Length: 440
Image (cartoon, rainbow, N blue to C red; front, side, top):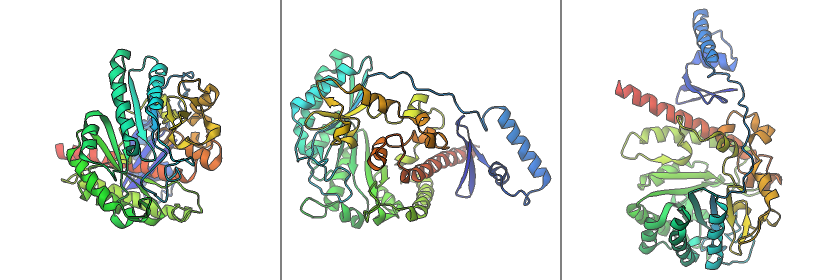
């Protein structure tokens, strides 16, 4: 399987199975795509065909499908999300968790439940040394005392068990203060701050529970955080049908000085006025091209930044199992609700038929196995896709939410994912090519 595409007037080819990636010219693209060859001379065609034949012989073009299989199921857990709060001080219109409540009563996690979750993670992690814990919500800062106590508890016992915890927290930053930032710097491996971008865009959908705008407060707190941050962070936005020109929001955040940025498409039922529809796809795909061009140019200047979805490593990709499985939800990764119920991931919180059990008790290994074996080889639609080793079959929570089947991909996300992969690959190739030219 070979996929060709273009960006910024340059052309590229990806061999799906070998992972080989090439910058190509128009004639090679025409041959690979089976296009009309009349614009080219017989000599040009012959030279290009010889080069294609050579690459085939080397096994880097039209490589046979990899015979890949997942390792046998293991009950080991290495990552956990603690949904410490089913409560939020914002009322974002597009919230997948029904205002952070997950269709539940507004409640916070007790320290006893969080402590039991940490104990369970240690107990079920086998010989894994590095363990990951993400504090999520709702808004986890509304239960920050439990967050802090949980972190300190884990730190107090990790060495005794031969473990190393990496903590992450996702916050809307509306009440973020300097003491919080100091704690983040000391203990949080990564911090994700939710900001949607330009003031009009952010304030349209991210208001307080009382309906007040939040942009100015969030930006002021986020910028103070950025200036004091010692370690990894991201500002993460969501784009909806209200801002299909989301490149402007990414560049707005970069203009404010943020250099680690992510923005995700909203995932909503098609009846929502914010949902991205099929007729919006050409606009969205063109916007990714626009963002890629601006990204390449800005990374040559003092406005250098990382965009999460354009960060790709062509030299040392994840292992085969990771590329087939993706996030590991339900198997290596689980989430815990405030009442101690364990779910396959934070987006399944409240989906009672997917509950795996309770912290401190037995987990439903049959459900976990279904999630573990839900992978690229088990999905015919995904197996035939050129981007399968980058997408890993997509989000199982979205698949279940919209199709009631974790094996059936959520199709609206597929075209966006493929465009992001194209942009990421092209950006990497263009940057490396430009660097080579400079060095020569």
